[in-house]
Length: 330
Image (cartoon, rainbow, N blue to C red; front, side, top):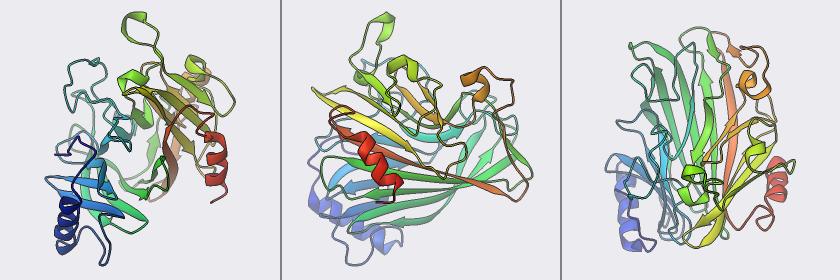
């Protein structure tokens, strides 16, 4: 599986790229994996390297839904909680369905695709449409089926993940998902249990177990902080805290073209961080069903997000200015 060390061998990275290219899955001809973005299928996962350094894996086999894990910084620091994929021994074991970085929702035609209960559905990998490496960016494009516990297919989706080559200490994932009402009318239901999400490193938490205060903080675009950000609408939100002796953060940007922009934030002081445009009943105490999003049979809906992994806090990382640049298409 993914090496934990920062100094992954350039020779290995080039070899992996070559193998993937010969298989028709990975690097484009002429791409130098030691300096560009390498996207390679190996050992049942898809690995992403920046200039030979490991960044993340796309995990899609024998899982409840596809997800990225781990997500590593320039010095090998973990932005995501390691349990339940690994057992470092010093992490809380709550919410085992919070795995890395993922998209899932708790109510699709009444089926829960958020949890991992016996009654929950599964997002099943169907095919890779593209695994592409490049000098300046890499791509993973995959299609999936939403399968209920009884075997019914509820809907399908297409996920496009873009990985730009870092030009500085920041690292970026652009995540686009199109949900298709391929099996008939589809209702994405009004629940807080969703949706575009990441479970952050335990040391970044605003609060620690047993009521102990943490060293992390949450800030949204309106300047609202920490626990007060839950259920509030904003075009972006940032969560920062200490990892391996230094302050790092993760910001999620909600694209202006998304339905119901600016989104609501299902962001918790224990490290769950999610954009959720559906849970109006929970967030604003309105009549249940207010947040339902209906997609007619044969129709689709698309959501776009950017994840910004940055050093420092919200201010020093200039998160607001970087959102404005992204919003303007720069």
